[in-house]
Image 1 (spheres, helix red, strand yellow):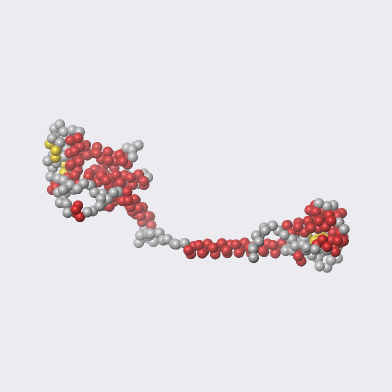
Image 2: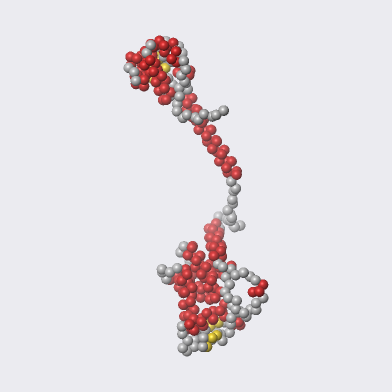
Length: 323
């Protein structure tokens, strides 16, 4: 069986043999009969419970008031003083459609049906949403063991933000593969800088100390990536100084950090200052430019690892070679 669509319009009930009803036949006036049909439609549309006026009947049916009063004469419409026992008394100036509520819904019934339909709609929607919630997987946000503490809520949130930034740094840093060949290499053999998780955490800490949190997190992350790359070669002190100098400049990006660090190395090398415990550069007469830069990088290699300049020996440039 095919379900017919629901029509939102209001309807009134009218017998299919209305044209042959004795009272309609007694009218002997099709225009007046149409006025009766129009009066029924008006009462149904505005939920008047059958109450209407002669003037409204004439207006809705497009007929004269004389033709409208023919409905009163045959008993299809009642005015004040009528004798029909089935219909209510009618005040002066009003009219009433005979037996209207016996065949059509009252205003109260219409409103109750609307309320019931709305309630069914709300219950149906709630049922559908509850089923949807049952089928949707629920996720619980990850928190640390102290997340339930009100006094530590702010510090925990700050800690989690730092952890997330360190994770972001680690995912951007290349990590060399650990091989058995490298593990067996003697400590005195240079192996080059290695970027590890420890370096990334240290880099993030140095950025926080030197820069603070007043710049966007994306810039802090990029700076930490650059710092982690420099750490194995120049150590934390020079890296921190480079970050501080970067912070005093404007109009530069994170990648400039390496150039700033290079300038610092050359400055220290030219002055023969100590870069780290157990390592310093020795300035030779006439040594400038490339030789000064080389002294700085070699001295940093001796300070940052056991491979170059083991046991804290000094590095001296003679004729462009290290001894």
